[in-house]
Length: 269
Image (cartoon, rainbow, N blue to C red; front, side, top):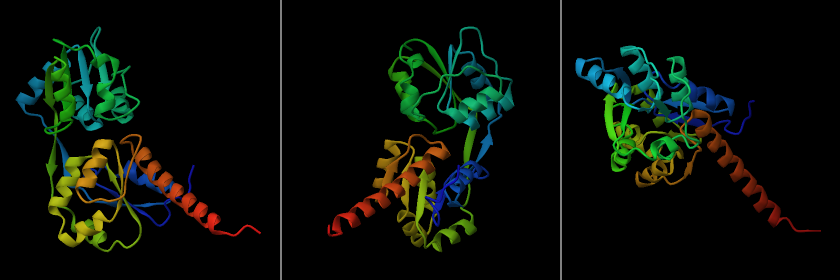
């Protein structure tokens, strides 16, 4: 189903290089165009130490996959197999689909597809003295590990991929500078936002901060406000379709409010 709620708008994506397609498709469904600004690329870590950590993580009674990239990187290093009695958990639908393609099912997925939603799953409530493998990247999903350790779990962290910083493409920076129409920032990573703001020239950063923000969580919404973004809404999850859906809903809600305002000023005959 296509509509034109975001016609004339740009959706700004901070996804890793080569990973903008899903958000581009979701934006197009609502009539928007995508402006891609990648602060990093994804690289699998295949050294011997990482492989040892991965084997240890996969041997735990519970295994948490934090992203599709984590699943793909782990599967590239060794076949993934679900052991007898083992529980697998994914932070969202995209990660669960990646696990299914790698041969892991069924997988527990939270309704609220973020770190907080994952930590609320029943399988992670009674974890004292229990091993929990975490498939992730350096710096990624720190709240999950911290809370699991607080609950007494023995967390085995396997940093199977890395986000490698790259220089912002001049084409994307120029397009941002030239942006004159309405724009939305799809915010699913605080680290990505920090990386972009650290590299953007002051004039381009000013343009970015004028964009409305669709944040994947309340935590990211608060982060955006502290970084100078004034108009922030919270999406149902970090999925591209949810981020774009909340943009369309906000615009539709604003239009409805405007129409109500006009109607209230029309004299009744």
